[in-house]
Image (cartoon, rainbow, N blue to C red; front, side, top):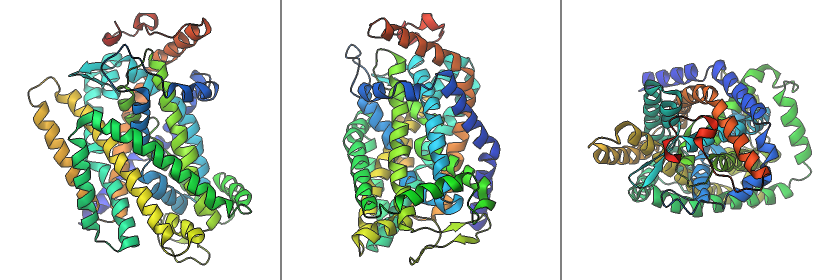
Amino acid sequence: MEQVLNVIHTISGWVWSPALVAICLLAGLYFSIGTRFVQVRRLREMARLLFSTDKSQKTGITSFQAFSMALSGRVGTGNIVGVATAIGYGGPGAIVWMWIIAFLGAGSAFSEATLAQIYKEEHKGQFRGGPAYYIEKGLKCKWLAIVFAICAVLAAGFFMPPVQSNGIAISFANTFNINPAIVGGVVALLIGLVVVGGVQRIANVAQIVAPFMAVLYVLLSIVVLAFHIHDVPAVFMDMIRSAFGMNQALGGILGATIAWGVKRGIYSNEAGQGTGAIVAGAAKVSHPVKQGLVQAFSVYIDTLLVCTATAVMILACKTYNVFDASGNLLVAAEGVELGAPDVSYTSAALGTFLGGNWGGIIVSVALFFFAFTTIMAYYYYAETNLVYLFGKGKKEHVLIWVLRIGVVGMVFFGSLYEAKAMWDLGDIGVGAMAWVNIIAILLLSPKAFKALKSYERQKKEGKEPKFDPKEIGAKGADFWL
């Protein structure tokens, strides 16, 4: 088993080479410039469109349900455990790079979600869309679409769910002394009960749980920080100094600071990865840009609010260690006994305010809901791509049940092994999808830019924007004809 884990770790390093970090940052910059920083110009409209939907379309889910499902996928273990690992291996400055990739990534998220709407299709009473669909219809590249779909089924169905269940199991084991296998079994059972209901049940659960837990968690973080308010300015200064190699103790790991910030940022907010686009394609809107704006907004909620809340708590309460690539301790927590980066960093931060074991209890409960809804979103990502691969055949129904059983099994599996192995598997899945999707949306970027111009022209004319694929030369956008 040790050899297998080493191979997984090596593959993760190959996938997440400096080249992928660079292309994620550069793509985000390109889309931000190409849309004239739509993530800033249309910020107020993003919030308004959350509750806008096209009632003329009977198929599909509402904009808010699509936002909630995307938020479910984005707000998960990455916001609690992922932030801890980013700080633990990249130092406080890694959080600044998470902000940077979130701000730039909102441009990527806007573009991929808009493309997903342009090239979506109706299948058995539901809308399906995402990278596989816009690669085939927009780029006319069937083989690359199949590659993405296979990566997405493997990643979202088998590689990424164990990361979430592993975080829940470790947290409950540390806090309540419950056998991780028992926790994994309960989570697997609950996931099974939700996913058998299909996309509508997932959307219904997500629209209640995801926004509620995100708001509650941020409010709790604000209360904790209020008691450490005198430390907050120094924390932000340390984050900025560390982000650009100006911290003497951490100057030698600047490359790791950037890499961990970008990697954990993308894992958390999913911008450019393609998974947010899969949910975006399921929504019923009158113009693709509307869903592009909604999905860009969800990136902000995930990283700039929830991830930042976790990070500032950990840093202000000084409940973290920092390690270099060789495992050498560079910075040690003051007065708190902590090991390698995991959920204990966040639990200890809350514990300094609440006392006793309450920090662990609250983090465990929050992590359960965050990770649970994330697994639901992962299942939907995998199902959509399975439908793309086999939706026109007789095996679709059987394969969906195989997927459901597989997801449930991997959720249980994730509770049995160490966190590092689970994160390596998840990173492989995320990285593989990101490589394919970013190349695709860069090639299709003119369509996203033209769609935005069409939308803004109609808004300027005082019209409610309606989409005509002929206006932007989007051949293959058959749903809108």
